[in-house]
Image (tube, rainbow, N blue to C red; front, side, top):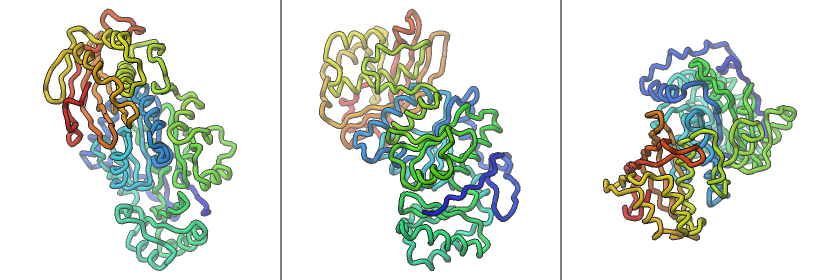
Length: 466
């Protein structure tokens, strides 16, 4: 197993091993669109982020051995109900943008605020994933991709990965586990002799990535923390989550909590034994994947750690204040359980739902048809249990409430519906009111308006309810 030698400048930016290079100034980010996307994230936060989660995807946030995606859906509900409004979600993956987008189509993933891809060589912001040009320019120091490609071609033990995984600041190969350590040592020496300042990361028992020395998941995180600090919005707490060797750097950043999920790879556990065994801020969870992340939130007391999906009776939830996002998550979990036949088909169930809807409330269907909320609830009787025994899930993404009056909130979000292999999504806006109700009663739904997300419309509009 190759040694993962980590070098950081904890003022925030990585430094080169062979020469001292000036830290790029934040004002050097000249890409207007990048700045617009970063600014929109900063504007959403009225103060420092309550929590920033920085998570690997494959076998960390996403459990490929969980066909129902239950741990991921549990995390989704927890995040949207309790954290989205005042926290930051960062995905840090070894995948290229192409494979990352493919995974988003396959799994019920949330939309992150920031995406770190290609083993920390690319940083992107917002829904449009605008790249951070300043980060890319910084990585050019003592990096020459052509030389890396030329020299690695002399090693028959290396098998080039697919073209999608070859990036401007990353050259990726497959290599047999028993050959990785010696090959890493020899290759590192060869490239240094060519005048390059690089790092080699081996992970997953087969993946070998060659990057600029200043790159990597840990370096990218240090850069982000520096950037957030410059905005006066350094997160109150940061939790790094991973399962393999290319995540090791994440656990070396000062003042960052870390969780290695229960199914972590041998190479990462060996790194922990050698480098973080006595670090109380880094734990090895007993739960797999996203469930391990939830476990770590509770272990470190970073905030609420009970997912709404784990609450059997949502009426038992005791809230101190009105929480619009929680109301939205709770509503759609009821709808999912109703159609899966997990809630009793009773007058009481429907009357409880009607109790949180204004009698004069309206629902605008994505087709443009308008009907009363009460009629919509009455229609639910016909679809109770119609998805029983089938793969059917509902989740909400980017739930963002805005208080528009002393007793009213406008909540926008994406509502996803997965039925078998078919996925649909609506951009949804809900008007909620606290007028004449208590926190125990819950907010009143007064208006729901939905439009189809481009490319994600249902094949039959009649099958789309709420």
